[in-house]
Length: 518
Image 1 (tube, helix red, strand yellow):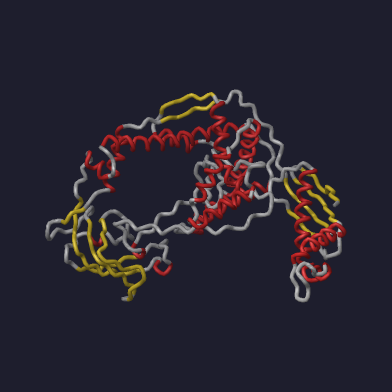
Image 2 (cartoon, rainbow, N blue to C red; image 1 turned 135 degrees about the vertical axis):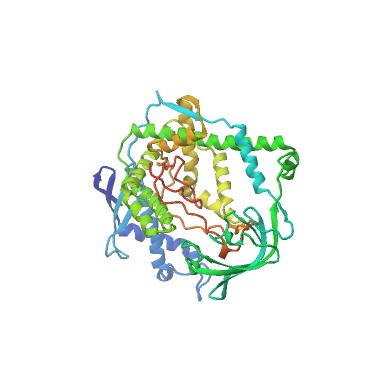
């Protein structure tokens, strides 16, 4: 095997690799000898099939397998002997006109990770903004629970329905006098004013009484999920069975007991704990963004273009998916196209910070333990159907890249925690609004993949795609109407906002977080 470097510019490398035909032929002969005793052929006793017949029958397939294995070994040797750290999977091209019996001539091009020097951690200072949970916030949370738990009782006979009341009815949806799929329901409970149904539906039920029949006309929104109903006018024949009014929800010990708790104080304690956890998460996000801004400000090394391209591809895919869901996809797409350069800069920043965090972690002995890794695998497996979980766990154990991708977010968080411990941290109590404003005003605030030997990028061939776990359909809430009358959820606008601080690299099948602009 002959390896010659043909290009060395910045982070880019190129090589020519020649694998001698005699080496390939020798390996094929070795495989023939190994397999011959196992081959069965009419007219020959088991294990007595001549090697030349085995080679004649299986030679092309064996040659292809040997060639593939030899190329993989050549790549391993190239990386090892040249002490390379590939940023992404090397591009390998077999020379034109190659055929069995000839030398295999390969062209290899790749990008390597830059040499990153771990920064000094002396003088690292951070401000930690904290928010105390007030009694008023706990009371507001109680009110929200009570509103969600409210019950309805029959109204007085002859009462006309008002906003806040519940109407129990049958309805049949029609277009041009013909019923359409999903537009029919019986004994459907609809809370007027809740805004759960398409515009105009609930409003036209105001004033109905029990026993009344009414026909209403509505126009489906332009962004309605069912294509055949988008922007279309339809009628609904309504038969009202009952009008109900909301019963008063008294927040006391009995209310807490109905939720499975001991008393009201226990419920308040749980809510306070949840609010504290939420605010603690916001505080960590603010600190992490401030930390990453400091790191980004002090480092400006070259990053592999292929890694930036891959990172930008993820960002752009998310943005275009969001734009496609907008009421005016063309306008939304034009808006993000105008800011494409900003998103490209975000991709560069993420890659650079990821490489820097990786170097800091390796230089300071930050590791993910076997026990932590086992828990990660088990948690990720829960996203699959029960019958697929064991197969997923085996896949992660056998594929180093899959394991690294799963490990990367936790590794980054551990590096960040390590830096928090090293920093001089001052605390300041602020309001929730001030904390939110601080998060949104951070200059860059993007995390990134922890890149390097443990990054989870495809330095080798990509693994076969695993079947995604099917999730059960969500059970409709008691107040919801069938699909044809449901109001579609509002899509998030594809507009740049403060960039996220949490890791971008997630193990499959978790969804990628939306890319945001600094």
